[in-house]
Image (cartoon, rainbow, N blue to C red):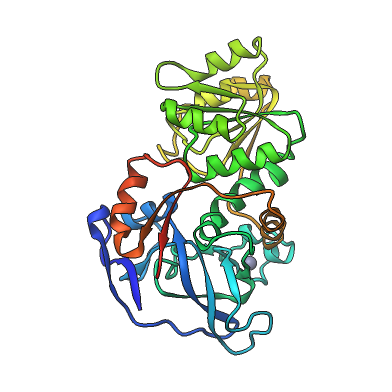
Amino acid sequence: MKAAFFREHGGPDKIEYGDLPDPSPGPGQVRVRIRAAAYNHLDIFVRKGIPGIPVTLPHVMGSDGAGVVDAVGPGVTRVSPGDEVVLNPGISCGSCEFCLKGEHSMCVDFHLLGEHVAGTFAELVVAPEINACPKPASLTWEEAAAFPLTFLTAWRMLVTKARARPGESLLIVGIGGGVAVAALQIARLMGLDVWVTSGSADKLSRAKALGAGTGIDHSAADFSREVRKLTGKRGVDMVLDSVGKATWKQSIASLAKGGRLLTCGATTGPDPQEDIARIFWNQLSIHGSTMGTHGEFAEMLRMFRDGRLRPVVDAVFPLSQAREAACKLEEKRQFGKIVLRLD
Ligand SMILES: [Zn+2]
């Protein structure tokens, strides 16, 4: 099969496009002929090498993908060859105490397609049958590949963890990345008052076109001052910060009393300066979140199926240009998802 992979860790120059052996589906697994896949920041981290997460080389990248089931392993009952599917990238054991509670992304063996195991940047990928869900018919292949990881992450954060209610305010720090744009779309669906920050006027105007009410240019000054000024010193109910070290303190300072800080990543680093006094005095909560459960994936999928959600695709590259696509993501030039197409 053709695939985009790396043989050693490093920069985008390590990405190769070429032939690898076809994978075979094991018990309970399906093999999917991928029609489209999508990049996430995770793909960059995995390629650079994440301490404690060894990968077998050569490693096929990619957590997001959609395609047609091409073969099934022993014991598979829910899915048949020919089914059009979108893959939930989160793989859990199904039998640990957290899986038994339905908390699949807390599984002791939780891992993602393209992270610990071969991913979707290939003509063929294998995954557990429970991870293969019907593709929403209204979406193109490119759109179907564009939503799983980011929308699942944003869905769990806003719906399950933050328990957001209509009318509440949400500040999304650094609009443009996949999770941030997904959160903006879901938040509007939930009736939230959405605020966004960016250093790019173009990204702020695109966010407003998607329903953001307030855009703050964070390139010049501390955005928390602007938030406090515009809210009469109150602050916002929730802040979604997946930027990490560079913005964490400003995010804490942007929250109203009783506010919730939501985090699912730290692209600028995991060790920010902390403001503990503000956390206890203002009675803030910090909600960490990773991916989501199979149930949350199914809930989120319904919104795509009935047309209420449609992912934003920034650009589509052929799989053979996976390296060029990675460069666009790493330069943070995108708004929405960077998709790879397989012909
Ligand atoms: Zn488990």
